[in-house]
Length: 192
Image 1 (spheres, rainbow, N blue to C red):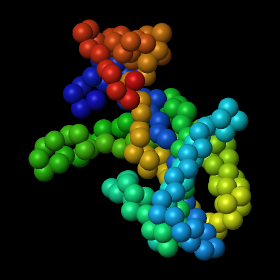
Image 2 (image 1 turned 45 degrees about the vertical axis):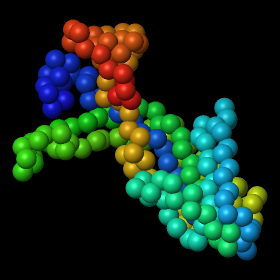
Image 3 (image 1 turned 90 degrees about the horizontal axis):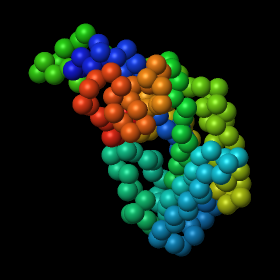
């Protein structure tokens, strides 16, 4: 968009989405005596999200800057980190907007914001994630110490802006990633 591509195609920067993400810290009544625990529950047709349980830790919280925190397990730890990821449904209203602000360096790439309202389907999935968290905690006899639903853009896995499709009227690129309205240009990343 900063390069002016949006002037050639008004659909550029639209249909932006992100992972749906809920995280929590669960506490066992007593240490399990294990240094590491890793459980992965894959998505199912009736559960459109996956779950990861990682521990054993002293109480902590996931940070994208320390994504391997669970590798430093502690046999005396009573806590596990619970991550729940689902795919949001990008809507026409999800978009990237460039601002007129300027950086001291004059670089335009950080002068933007993302508009991404959750769809009704996203809200149902987020509610199901919350219910599933309570269910898992009950099954493993753990207390939910802390939980948080990340806002759109908070999971660091944004996608879209260059919608892929078979119809040039409602997409930016073809199914192979070639731009419909800009010759000799293709995209091969999560923007499509």
